[in-house]
Length: 412
Ligand code: GCO
Ligand code: MG
Image (cartoon, rainbow, N blue to C red):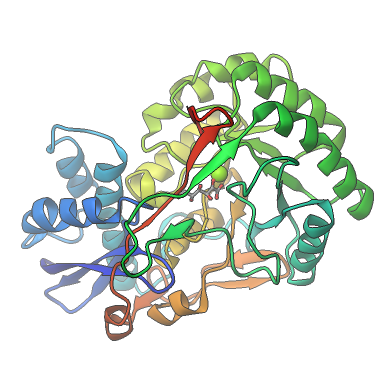
């Protein structure tokens, strides 16, 4: 089974996605997600200029060898662009292998360890009453766990808080698309960590007061705190029994987690901006985190994600894979097959895709009673409608930039 062709598809049905489609000489096709929010075209170029020519003619069955060939052979290892590109190749080859076997991918990963993957949705509000409505809407839509984010008194729009709370499908992304004639530039937001730290405990007090002690609640700090600020927030939130506090400090600084961990029992999650198992070695071996936030899309594919989760399991950490709308339905399907199969599953993020996205990507995944399931179709269970994809050309769109009130560029 040789690779006949590999095609890079960039489409923007509501937001930008980069997809690799591999076709074999016996007519099987496989898909991989290579979407890197705000830097999509770099990955598309990495794939079409540097990887596609190497793929044509290779044995499609040799997934491990192809992964090592692209990772070690490329010399320049790691980094979000490289790893998103390798991920798309790896995922597409797993899709093909599972289709060739006539099985849903999770069967090749060891079979089902659970009936479905517990998903958390994104409840948010500019203020507390709006947030409570949003939590309610999520519960009505079937969610059994919610992430909770709000605006901060005195600040303008805050990333992670939807501009409109009507319904649960549409989110705060893409932060900004450049309209016709507008220069493609990120929006800028203003941030004040002290104001945030004063506000957040009262938000959780209100949510627990309204919805009781059982509902799993999550919160994303989005890398904005210093270690000592994060330690204080973790401690202040202990009475509200969070499922996790995510990305409290900037991702590069693994040692920061030592300080946070030594001050609080609030469970910690990190890693959506990581792209390698090596980004986790200190965090896991020293037991500084509870949940691994990486996505298959940004970590080099199913092959290394499986290794990362196995390593995490040895140190008592669980999966909490990244699942915002910038992970395409292909990347989500890859996550769901792993979610179903691995022993140390924790939770799966699930921000529902725009209906236009689901016209382009036809997925067999389902969401029922709070649980996601990838479906029983052979392979990943996702096909791309290339005619529909062609109707939505790439549009520059960027994540925002965060500045402190005095104008200093800040982490986010
Ligand atoms: C999350 C996030 C996302 C990211 C986004 C970046 O889902 O936890 O933090 O909203 O910011 O995916 O591309
Ligand atoms: Mg996050």
